[in-house]
Amino acid sequence: MRTELVSEPADPARPNEDFASVGLPACGQGGSLVVLDGVTPPRSGTGCLHSVHWYTARLGGALTELTVSLSDVPLPDALARAIARTAESHAETCDLSHPRTPQATVALARWSPATVEYLVLADSALLVESPDGTVTPYLDDRLARLPRASLATDALVDATVRNKEGGFFTAAADPSVAARAVTGVLPRSEVRALAALTDGATRWTEKFREGDWTDLFTFVRKKGAQALIDRVRTLEAADREERTYLGRSKTHDDATAVYAEL
Image (cartoon, one colour):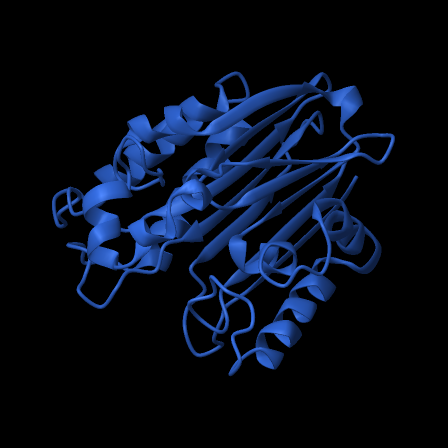
């Protein structure tokens, strides 16, 4: 199989709040990929002593281990266990009830000789290519479906829509949100390749309209994950002042792309 992983911070002088991994068990019978996008908090704080990249590193490490070592545990249960384990590691020092406690979006996939499982929570994306070349995006679009007025301020987001019924959900400190994820199981014979991306990479499609999801997948397969992120950086820089493309609150964002050809 072929795998490729690229992750770049928005600013080289600041830590990358994304996390990505590919896990391949020693038996060689399957594998998993994990992509997280840490949610950058406002300056008002999080109630936590730890940084977002601290959180994503620990949640991502737990997910990498659990998705590989517990292959019989469904992905939502693996995510719930990883969230609980991470929460326990700082529950005594931090206020985990704070709405801005460190958190992340999630895209997971795990494959065996028989199946490919997937899980998506919040606005990271998982693209699946079938043997005939059809590309299917698996997305959690609850955040995108919220009225823009609901997202006017960070305080309003925290009070009304973040990790609340009728809003959207992220992996924070409550293991029960794992049950809110978009999940499914596909026959392995129907999957040729996978791509998981944070929203810093999906800007290629969602913000800059360089092509649809099939075009994005084809770009990564032919030119590589680094070329995708390089192109996003070029587009971001060109639009730095004009902000022609709406819905872009910052010039650059951490960007991660993982490609796995099964």
